[in-house]
Amino acid sequence: MSDTSRILPPSEVARFTRALPFWMSFLLPPVAVFGAYHGGWTVILLPLMTWYLFSALDAVIGTDRDNADLATGEDHLSLYRAVTIAWVPVQFVTLFGLLWYVPQAAHLGTWERLGLFFGVGVITGTIGINYSHELMHQKSHFERWLGDILLAMVLYSHFRSEHLVVHHRYVGTPRDPVTARYGEGFYRFFPRVLWQCLVSSFRGERARLQRGNRPAYDRTNPFWRYATLQGFMLLLAFLLAGWAGIGFFLLQAVVAIWQLELVNYVEHYGLTRKHLGDGRYEHVKPHHSWNSDQKTSNWLLINLQRHSDHHYKPDRRYPVLQTYGPDAAPQLPFGYPVMTMLAMVPPLWRRVMNPRVQAWRSRHYPDVADWSAYDSAANPQPR
Image (tube, rainbow, N blue to C red):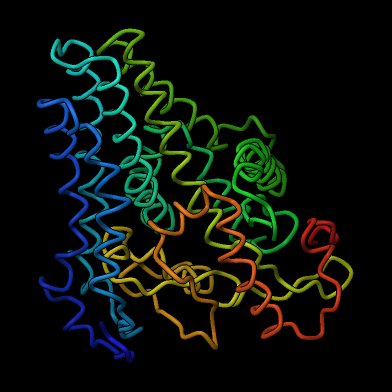
């Protein structure tokens, strides 16, 4: 465990041994194949590994507060960039290979097949959607397309528009659906964001097109691309395994979306930007996202838990994301694997997190006496 922060020079960031741990996600597809071949209890290895194993490793290995030098350039990050690019064909082959194999595998019973694709959804959500998030933030059209392909594999393509056009602009305000409100349990949050994010993402793209005097149905609206890619994925699932293929494909997609929204729930729970009057809000700062320094889960999630810096500087690639101390950003007590499990037990979640939100409010906004409008998202819509 590192108790103090070091600034890592670009030469050290570029070292093979420093980049290698971020490739550990590639251990998961062989586990899925192993489960499909052997059946039985092995079909639950994927959730056991991503949830419980990494929670245990976080507890043993601890935190990492080292930060890459901000002068680290793209030429030092090729090994990290390759992680997210290489994952796309690996996930595609794993998902559709299993969709072809599992329905005809006589040694697998119904519950084994369902359990296996539940686990597949855990990795297409925990890894696939997370990597798509990194890819969609890049300037490269190639990387953005790869992000779109990953999202199409879980039927959540509009997440790109919602995230880039809505979430980053309006996080911590009433216009952002995925800023979880103080006191809002996950089981209220989840159905709310499923609908609101779809609507807000389309409205965001429509508004963008209207600013260029183009209609919502213009060919440059990415929703045409989203529909085409998702339609292709569904067609391929049907061609490989018929209606069973569609069913298993939908199962893993639902699980993946659930995994994503659990993370979304954790990332900004109760953290709101101060309303300055007349629909104006303060700028996004590191203290508007929860931060976590857990080393092992940050390897698995490519530093997603350094979320405070991601929102502060969203153009930074994941190896360069900075971590902050408690004076600058609120700290989660555990990494995302534990926190997402806590989120599924609302009374326990509130017991752990509500006092932390209240402490955050006292630290950063001692002048705000009434938080009711923030808690109910009743403040004016941002201009």
